[in-house]
Amino acid sequence: EGLRAVNLGPNTPVPAMQQAFAFHQPRLVWISASSVLAPERAAEIANWLVSLPTSTLAVVGGRECGPILAAQPSVRHLRSMGELAVLAAELRA
Image (cartoon, rainbow, N blue to C red; front, side, top):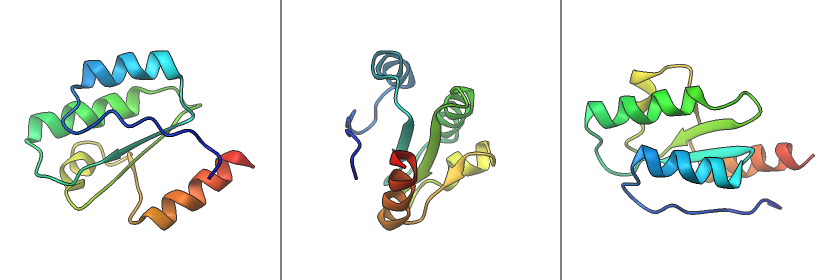
């Protein structure tokens, strides 16, 4: 969709996400949770997402993203890759 994706892989520690964010300075951060997260890990991810600058859109998805949303309800939730494609198109516009 005209954006460059950087995949940090599964189970990436939040400090590594912070370093990657500082290096790449993305306009969009997408976290896909496809396996069960411990509540502490979900809260750590959620708190990091809401700490990002307002110029960066942070979203989560995946079948196991519920704990992230429970830890920080203000995190934006996308239910499909189609929704992500629409959002990416909006960012390009």
